[in-house]
Amino acid sequence: MKKIGLLLLCGLAWGVLGAQPALRFEVTEQNVGRISEQGGVVTRTYRYTNEGDLPLLLIDSKVSCSCTKVSFSKKPVLPGLQGEVVVRYDPRKQPAGKIYKAIQLFSNDPAGRHILIFRGEVTP
Image 1 (tube, rainbow, N blue to C red):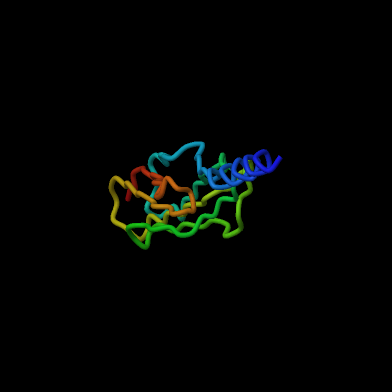
Image 2: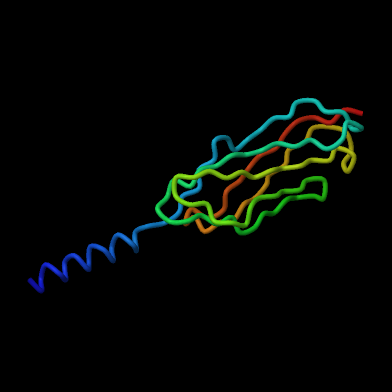
């Protein structure tokens, strides 16, 4: 009887230790096409799902210039549920031409850093 209890306890511990969040985006790259330099801020939403067993937390984001802003909820996303990352790009803060913005996202997903791509072309 003690052996069965010990085996059940070990199995439970292994299940908890093996559990982790898993961040999966529907799309990781969006092309906004041609946008006018005077057209105003362009917004795109990147939806994701927590495909893991534990709550997922988005912790931080990094962008390469002040023309790009990122926002997301600081609340945990439970397993099986969805969240979103909103990227705002201001074409007035950069010269006209092709744009390619890599947004780095950091979470408690053991895979580490995730990259979102925002591309297009700004016209004068």
